[in-house]
Length: 156
Image (tube, rainbow, N blue to C red; front, side, top):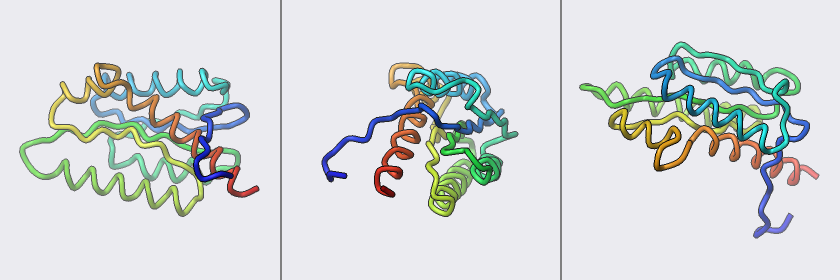
């Protein structure tokens, strides 16, 4: 592979897991729908999506790890929304979740697309879940699929 080549995001023949937090469901559902649509747009089949619901963001890493341990799951997408509160809880939660997702990805050797928003308020979340900034669910799916293909390329 050339250092300057672009790896296409291609879902054909891949099975993926999408893990979605139940907190801020209006936000996470919009990102889930976009991630699913992106998978289909990139050639994937609806039957190749394993969807899991997490009670909250903190539970996402365990479900991602469990899904990636299954044979045939090539990648996962983590979808959640952590909104700043009155305490520093949101920062600790966001750091714990993202650090653990990175560790799982490296340990399993399988990509985890990150669509766990860490925002100041719901207006910012809406902007990232299909608003003026785009949809982080679709972006996370694209990144995960491109990473699967890049890893395949490197292993050849």
